[in-house]
Amino acid sequence: MELFGLYNYWVFAIVLMTGFYAVIAKGNFIKRLIGLSIFQSAVFLLYITMGKVDGGTAPIIQEGVTDQVYSNPLPQVLILTAIVVGISTLALGLAIVVRIKESYGTIEEHEVQSLDRSS
Image (cartoon, rainbow, N blue to C red; front, side):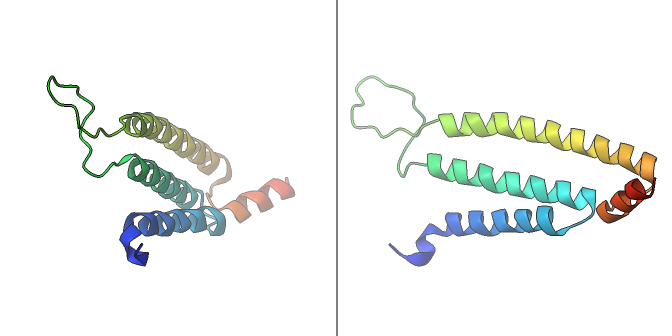
């Protein structure tokens, strides 16, 4: 198997590590939420990629067709649900960041921690 023949897995790994870097290395809460969304998108890409069957069609059974290869619709359904959960989680995270900004006047983690320690 060719090294670049699995380009979708390479894209998954690059997007995943980009999101992971943003979550771990950034101190700004908004940047961390964006990194978390990028990380989540990479996982969605992986699941959709794994659900793809070469030559597969939608699982609609027809009379007279016996040698048909079907794709599994379950990964797409799971990802659709995960997208809804991810959007609501992001909205909750943004609401929490707004409350942190109102309380502390900043959204930088180290500044929030230093203000927390001083009070």
